[in-house]
Amino acid sequence: MPKTITINPRWGQADETHDPWVLAHFRARPSDVLITTAPKAGTTWMQQILHQMRTGGDPNFDSIDRVVPWLERPRPGMNWQQVLDWYDTLPEPRLFKTHCTAEQTPGIGTAYVVLTMRDPRDCCVSFYHHIMNLNDSARELVGLECPPSFASHVERWLAFGAWYRNVKSWWPYRDHERVLLLRYQDLKRDLTGSVDRIAALLGWALTPEHKAAVLEYSSFNWMKAHDEKFSQQIPSRAPLFKTGHFIREGKVGAYRALMTPELERRILERAREELEPECLRFLEVE
Image (cartoon, rainbow, N blue to C red; front, side, top):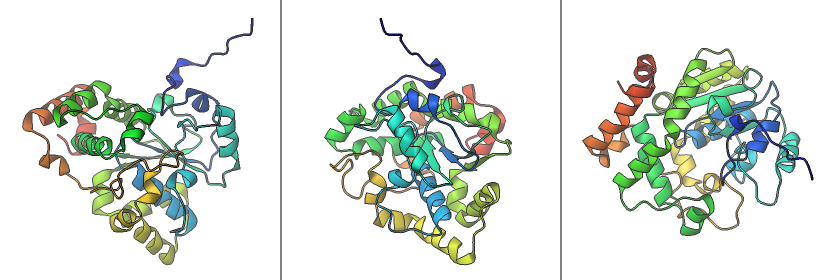
């Protein structure tokens, strides 16, 4: 009988968006940068910001996932070792996105970590539009169902609890010397200052011309006009999203247009139950 190979359960269970074998065997480098966020908390925006900072301004990339891969994402036609072999060919500094909690993220203390935290109400609403704007075949591919109503979506979002797990797990690292915790609203209010903070953490020197390119290519208008570069987050020949609907609004407080006071109350009550008061104040939800 062949010996069964197991891995530590800390790396999670395999599904359409999560390969625990990649996480278990990934070896971080000191120059790596991991973008660690809850879903719809500014992940794609931070991928773009860091890619532009690294390259000095690159408007010609084909897909953000090719230049800043989703670390734990299964790759069709590739086993976990082949995925890691591909990662080893990427030029330094390597950039990766992940939706893992701190407990599931490899390389803390070796790699740099840049994470954005966003108001849970906005994350919930943004994820609803994310699901609704997927094509039917794409929803089936990633194991998502179109909710019959927004209220039912909130129920599912609360039951899954990814936002709460992510924020709770990363909050203790807020003062770590290789971790930068940014708020989504601060990126919106002062992108220039946020880029400066990222550059200071990573030790990346930016010329004025370089910074101007980063700000231009990371602007909402530029990303919206080049939506196709960001909507193809997994390898597929068919479009995953309705044309022009991946980069949607990116507003702060947009949840107010859709969320009832009762649904808002439930989201915030759970945040108060699970997060420290200091974290709630930092997020500006208390």
